[in-house]
Amino acid sequence: MTDRSEHNVSGRSAGTRGFGRRSFLMAAGAALATPAILKTISVARAASPAEITFSSAKFFGKRTVAEVVDLFNQSQGEIRVTYDELPPPSASTEVHQGLVQRLAKKDGSPDVFTQDVVWIAEFAAAGWALALDDVISAAEAAEYFPGVLAACKFDGKLTALPWFVDSGMLYYRKDLLSAAGIAVPETWDQLVAGAEQLMKAGKAKIGYSWQAKQAEVLICDLVEFIASNGGSILGPDGKTVTIADKPAVEAVQFMYDTIAKYKISPADVRSWDEEPSRMPFTGGDVAFLRNWSYVYPISQDAKTSSVVGKVGVAPLPHFAGGKSAACLGGYQYGVNASTKNRDAAVTFVKWLSSPKTQLTFATELGLAPSRPAVFDSAELGKAQPFMQTLKPVFVGATPRPVTPRYSQVSLALQSAVSKAVNDGNVAAALAEAKKKIESIVSA
Image 1 (cartoon, rainbow, N blue to C red):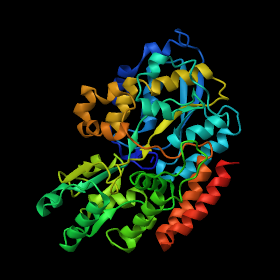
Image 2 (spheres, rainbow, N blue to C red; image 1 turned 120 degrees about the vertical axis):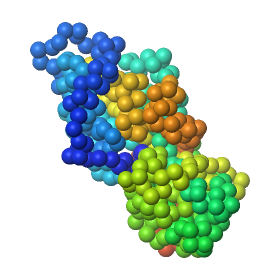
Image 3 (tube, rainbow, N blue to C red; image 1 turned 90 degrees about the horizontal axis):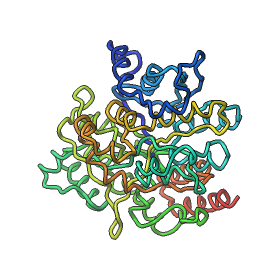
C-alpha cells in the first residue's frame, strides 16, 4: 500500500457523495445478503438485535467503509453494527495506538476491528485477538491466497481473517520513456540512468519520487530496497538482527544517494508519505514513483490527474544480482477475544470477508481481494481491469519483520533510517539500530 498497510485512498468525502445513497444501499444490501453466513444465528428476527461495534481505519473510494456496514445492517435484522471510524492508514501510529488502548481494556469493545498485517502477531500474543480456527473450516481457509492466510496466523493459529492485499510497485511515465527510448528499468542503476536522462532533458522535474518520512511507510520502502539486494531486517527466527549487514547498509546508502548523490529525488522526500509523493506524479512532474495500487485509478481520473493514459506500472527494480521485492501490505480483520457477542461478531466478520463483500470493496473502494476466485472474476475484470494485472506482484510480496514486538522494532528502524537518509552516516545509524532491535526482540 505497506503496508495499503500505509496509504490514504483518495476519494469523495461523506459530505460530497451526492444523491442516490439510499437507492444504492437498498439494491446492494439485497444483493449482498448472505443467508449461509447469517444462519449461525437465529432465523427469526430478534426483538432486540445483537449489538456490536466495528472499528476500522478510514478508506475512501466510490463508497466508504461506513456504507458497506450499512449494507449489512439493512440486509438483516439479527445484528446491529455500530461503525467506529479510525484515522486513515497513513496515520498508522495513531490507528495502532487507538486499537491497543481499547483492546488492552478487555471490555469487549470493539467487537470487530481491522488491523495492519504487521500487528497480527502483536495482538495475538497479547491475547486480544480471538482464534478463529473453530469457526473457519479448512475448506473456507483454502479459498484465500496462501500467503495472506499465512500472515493471518500466529503460533499456528488463525487469529485474523483476510480482507485485502496490497504491495509496493513502480509507476512510470510510459510516454516519456517511449519518446526517449528508455526501457522500463529492472535494476536501480537503470532507474537512476533513466531518471537522470529525463531530468537533464527537461522532461521531468523529479526523477524518482518515494517516501522517506519517519513513519511506517519508510519501513515499507526499506523492506523493498533491502530485500531487492538480497538482505533482510530480521532473520527467519525473528531474533537474529541483520539490519547492519552489508546488503542492508548498501540498500540504505542507495536511499540516501537518490537524494544527495544522484539528485533524482528531492530533499522533500524526507518528509513525504504516500500522498505528498503521489501528487507531483499525477501532476505531471515525475518520471518514476514508488507507491501502492490506489494511485492508478487516481492517475486515470482527469479530475485529479494530468497524466491520464500516460502511466505504466511495473515491479520495483532490484540491485545487481538481486530480485524485485514488493512490501506486503493490506489490512485484515480481527475479532476481539473479549467480545460479549461472539456469535454476532463472527457472523459479521465472515460476512465482511465473504466473496460478495470482497467484490464490493474491490469495485467500490479499490481494495484488492484476498480470494483468488474474486480476484479472477469477470465482475472484477470489468470494473477494475488494472487490478487483475497486479496479481503476480501481490501474491509474491515480501512481508515486513514478523514479531510480536513489531511496533517497537518499527519505531527503532524509523528513527535510525530517517537519520541515515538525512545525514548519510548509514553504517553508524544501522549499527545503533541493530543494538536497539536486539534488545527489543530478546526481551
